Image (tube, rainbow, N blue to C red; front, side, top):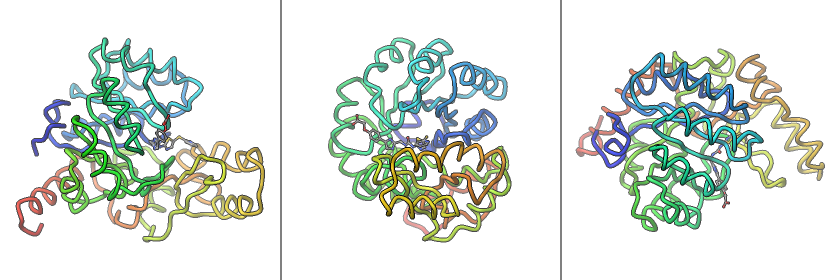
Length: 310
Ligand code: TUI
């Protein structure tokens, strides 16, 4: 599938694996890139040294382009921004903020810069600052989310900018990819489906929770604190939403989610951990290798875009 995104990034399929906190480590990123998509290492709130080690480990596993996602609310964002420039990764994506002050540094290092945006205003600003492409992420996504849905955000961003747009949020199969293209996207970013792939190092309990999830099994916590986060519903989200409705303080609520990703991803604590996942979890039914998943997605999307059923 050749698009502006495959040309820009030098990849075979216009499928980008989301830079999911704790989930997107080097085994997964390298497997996605080896399979012809773009793998990302999620820097999340990790220190710069961890990110450097991950980049070097991924490079041992693949010669193909891969990237790093920088979560801009991280206390280490500045250090990580310099590490990716020094290590010379192919692509940087950013989330949870505006990467304006780093764009020149990355461009000078020859890195393709792809900010994740949740609004037209930020999309326009990023284009003016020299971004190479954008991820327009709808609130169907897992993790930290904006307000708009993928269906409404992607065409509005595509109309507002001249750089290529990658759609994210709610996409887990070939139908979603074909639909994203109809909305004006030149590529897709998917997170949730990659959690369950065979190369993903995520605890089996978390993977099984995603595989079992139904349409209404995600919840958004933190709307009242200004940091909305979508995750699979469990004991933690139930308690959080109860406290939030009762007007609990930011500190009380934070306490409940402390270490939540580690509990979910490493310990497999599916009751108390933060099982970040998007609404597409209900579409994820089987655990495939990254190669088989990307082949299946591409085959399904191409058949639909040619006007035949997959
Ligand atoms: O960043 C994400 N998703 C994430 S980050 C994350 S780590 C985390 N852990 C615990 C609590 C909170 C986060 C988990 N999931 N997606 C990209 C994204 N960026 N979604 C929304 C935005 C966004 C929102 C507002 C980007 C920019 C923005 O405004 C910036 C501005 O200055 O206008």
